[in-house]
Image 1 (cartoon, rainbow, N blue to C red):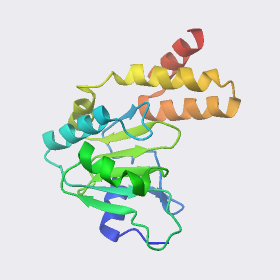
Image 2: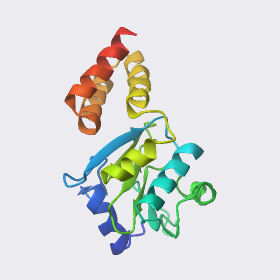
Image 3: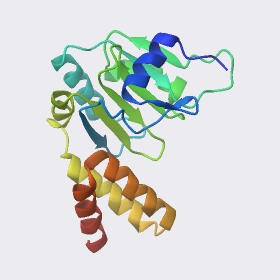
Image 4: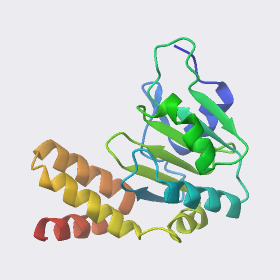
Length: 186
């Protein structure tokens, strides 16, 4: 298994700290703002464009794309350095990570997106970066409500527990409770 280059690991760790050798979807405590993108497996073109625009607005377009789950193939490329994040480059690299959880983080490690294979992505970074991501997307509460409705429809207690923990972490407990309550009553 190829090791993640140190500079990429360091940038990821600033946004999504490592746990048991892998980045965790929970953003670092020092990260100012968080959000979610849903559905996001893989990221949709509008989501990639929104992240790219936000990166440009904060002056940090250079980024890394790295597979969280590491393929066992010794020759598999799993880490990529990008001058800018774009729909074209994301599609081009898609074969390398399409079935794997992956992160996109600025080279400075100030913003990132953790794409989970459950269909949700966590956005983290400075407040102006996260706000900018949502300028051309549905509000985070609407995306969270869609996620909550889908998870609750499964009627599997452990998924409902995960949903509560996930939304608490990303949205805060008050907003998470409101979103889940609305989804239950819908």
